[in-house]
Length: 105
Image 1 (cartoon, helix red, strand yellow):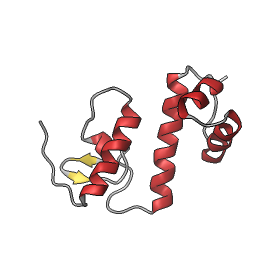
Image 2 (cartoon, helix red, strand yellow):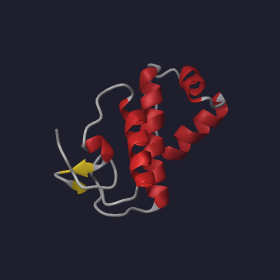
Image 3 (cartoon, one colour):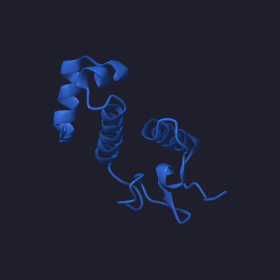
């Protein structure tokens, strides 16, 4: 088991765990999924940032992973992915277009 210091507060840890649960959808939660690499906080689960990141960038990273995961779970069926998210299909399309998520044809 890996142990790492958490530099933030409990609320930030709670949000990191919630994000990791959504992104991993039933799989084990790793240190990388929490944004921890080599005992250091990396900001986003993909490890592209170190230290604090702007809110919008963090939100977009979470949303991108969330919508991509829903599309993967629904085998690319946008109507099913929208149903799983609780969003109207048109709103779901708006989110994936804003985030630049490319649908595989």
